[in-house]
Length: 129
Image 1 (cartoon, rainbow, N blue to C red):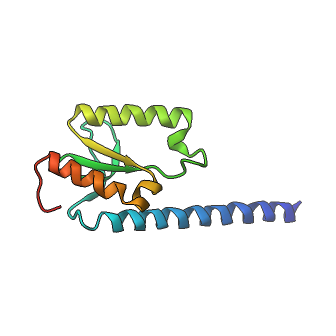
Image 2: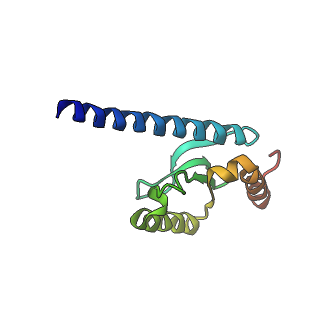
């Protein structure tokens, strides 16, 4: 029984390590893509009364990026309750005047994130991006 518990714990630990590595890799590729858009804040609480945060934000321009990982593994953002609460958060952000670019790892790798951000900054009258 103890050896079964150890195997289960090892599996859990290995899975946790793999997930942490994937999260770090995604963060690094995102921040690399954002390098040409300096001055962002991470984990900005954008709402005046809720504790909602956006992954990356340019507060003065009210532009934000939300990165959704795990889309093919039934991650939190793609399951019922998580999907529903994300819609509430994004709708509230829009009502507060935020432009939120929601991306998956594929959008980051393909360069689409940078294209959307460029358009968002241009639409806000920002230059130099």
